[in-house]
Image (spheres, rainbow, N blue to C red):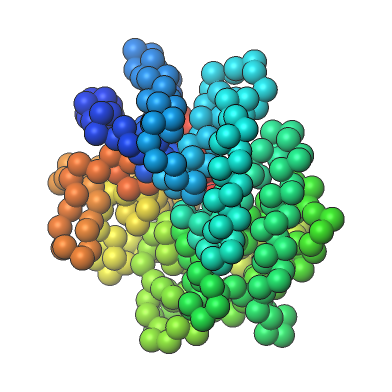
Length: 386
């Protein structure tokens, strides 16, 4: 049924490879395309070789282009993605992250400390995303990288704004406001704290205290859904002008639910898990695209992101309602794809019909089709904090 779309995406990715030579990113460029071809190769073995081609292109791009560190478009995310392919797909016998040399390690550390000095706690483009890269190094058995995650934890401890039992962090430094989203704000911090707690914690910082404080803050952000149409606002209440949040991976109820579900697991808190699932249950009924500001196929703020979230929930819970919801949003993805509504450019009120990346384009759409419809998955949704 959807084979023609996968074939079209594969063909376009191959033909556009040269255009993306300067973008080695996991979520924005060549590394994400490599993930698509590795997954597609499980259905079409003749396409598997292209995964290796894109990895080689990513290596060449990292070596020859201007270095950039953050997770979405930078070296940290690319290295996490390439190692994932080596460990989980190619079953390579070399040591984890063996391809990352001392020069790259030094560059990433310098960039990481600079982001922390600027107070940039963004997941996609800041220090929090790089924290997930260092977590992957720890999970692979390289415990020395706890020094890097402890650096972030100390920053969070020192810059925490406590209000009773609530804790929050300013976005981009003091006085810059607060962000509760998964893509750029507090929800991604909650996921990182949860996973660090589950993977050995820290003897430098009380992660559990910070995590519980952040959860209390997020829960206090809830608004009246009968009035606004969503359970949580687009921006934090402190920013004023409370507005309904879109239905999407990037901002709104779904990302907050992902953060709370991760925290519930790390804290072994059944009541918090119940709350998180109640958020997803509510959102499963939000199906009007225009009303919920769903305009395109992208993972970031479109239909395929919603589909993969609910499919992941189904795999974790066995709840058939979540799989039915995932299927609904997959069908909407196919509809919008055939209408060439790939990525909506809000400021221009038009669509980028040729965007190819994992997060915002056709590689992501293809991965979600493979994941939800064809049940092909190696765990790549973890790169989206699922």
